[in-house]
Image (tube, rainbow, N blue to C red):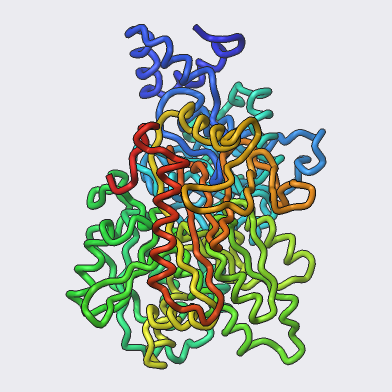
Length: 599
């Protein structure tokens, strides 16, 4: 049943009574294939670390996989200079939307990485904290690494494991591959890793909660530009933390900006591992999951709702319109607002000798190109990265180290980085920045939605639509993308999609880009995921890619118009027709058994 070396690993799985019972039950029921699937493959790093269902097996999140992943962050291979052991502090805070399993696995991480055996100083938060606190703490404390146990907005059965490097950004290649390699070479947990009392009694454990929280809130004021307006504001805000960890910290952030605290949604204020009031704890899903927030806002006379996801690193925003209806902004629309705001504030407050050519904004390649349009008109730099904030964080750190000034970065899945105190997306800071923006605009007689239209009139309409299909069969996903790579013959990509002609194709999975003279992609090759981008003759850019954390095939499509071409209705109609062609001709949902998100 088990390959060479696997039997030795099994003892680790069986240390936990629940996972032991799962393995024994599968064995007794003769479910050998499922045992092979659980025990003969290992978790790999996606766009947001390790993420999977909780359960027994090396491809699941459990006590053993947390211990194995953590102990290699201390014993990094001396053969790789970029990963050589560093002296000092190893930081493993644990703030999670799953209070029971998360806290205990955070303790396992702390035990595995030094307190248990290796005499390494470990900072371990005494209570739940937002994910952004971990990369922030790594930099503030001079830690060599940081670990966050969180499943973010995933379903309640899941959990996750994020690793931050000493630069304060999530790990990218080759560090992720080196960690997996080290786990394979050192599968046996160190002595003491299972000792539950070691963390509580060790003098090497320190709690950084108060220091980091105070410092974070102080640094947050660096991006507060209108405190006097905030103090006097009559605008009311409702905040939901989606049964996660954001409530206390968003309250403190509003206080730091001079606001009255936002009105919390009582049913969703405290951590709840069952996410009992929502089918899906993902604020990105829109009005359907914001029902409690919107009804409370109407009752309280609040015009703006801010929603942080369970680990508080992402932000959704809704605004009540004059007709009483609510507009839930997309991630791309919020990015247009944030981009305009951060640059306007920089321009008003920069020194006389500041050079706009030293200023940068960034976005992932599947996100809206609106920042590019603003940059072209205003004179600053815009850069794209691969999907995932790990790429943004690393690139921002590189720019900062070279004397550049980064104002804002985002990914379309409602992830925003305002300023550079945290080299990751941060829902806490984004929530209070959008509150200040709404307050300022109210003084100008404008709403967020009205300002968004003004931005599009100035820089050109950028109409985008993003959605996904569920697919639980990896071979089907692979077949869909391989068909597109051999659409008109071997290694021949499609030249059209229905009635729409294709100008260029970029395949980040293989490194191909027809728009480049050498046909090589400028973005790094990412062979562990599927991602194809099509540039159409009508100006639309569409990307098909697999999710790094969920069983999804996502599509992203955007029509970009020049300033002055403001017939939004025509652009939206053209985009919708192209998306329909993309789904019918390239994804073939009925043939491939794909389930659309709304179903």
